[in-house]
Amino acid sequence: MTRFLMHKTITCKELCATLIYAPKLKHSYIQVKHDSSIIIKTPYRQEKYAIEFFHEKESWIRKQLHKNSLHKPLHVNLEDEVLLFGEIYSIDSDEAHYLRKKLQRLQIANKTKVLSAYDNFYTHTAKEYLPQRVDSFAQIMQLEYKTLKFRKMKSRWGSCSSEKVITLNTQLIKVHKELIDYVIVHELAHLVHMNHSKDFHDLVAKYLPHAKALRKKLKNISLSL
Image (tube, rainbow, N blue to C red; front, side):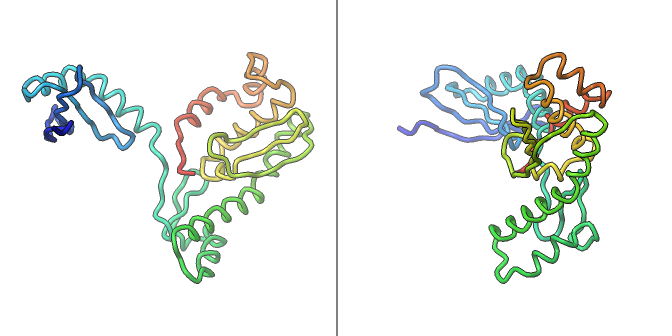
């Protein structure tokens, strides 16, 4: 006997879910996947029960869908567009000149090489734009760092070591400039407080009064790194 007997689509208002009958389960449950598809698995054969269960969980489902929308990755059409400072530009725009030249030099434009060209563009742009912002805020905050490094990171926007080395994620170039400034001030503040204490957050807020709102915005961004 197979574990899953049948797949069907059921609805709740404008919401659609895939209903899977799974006789070996002890309970029914709902899953909202990252792509916002809804899965209902149940050991009960009666479709009426599944529809009632769907309606009963509607509020919870909508909350999960809302969370997904907040963390929706920012995507561009490779070789046609580029994401820069929170805006999507055509590959033919002046802003994409460096990337366009890189792509034109590719002999074979497979996805790996195209992505590498994009990474190169973001690293190049980061090294052009970020140092001036770091130096500007360091002067305003009257702080000194030892070294500024750049690296593509999957889970952090930046870091600051006890040796006063600041590392910034090259993917920062994808987000709005106000969010970039927040990350820079955040890392510079670690030169004074190597923690996330109240004193640390007060220091960040001293130079960025809307730091809390900016931090929330940044947490809601999930970039395709």
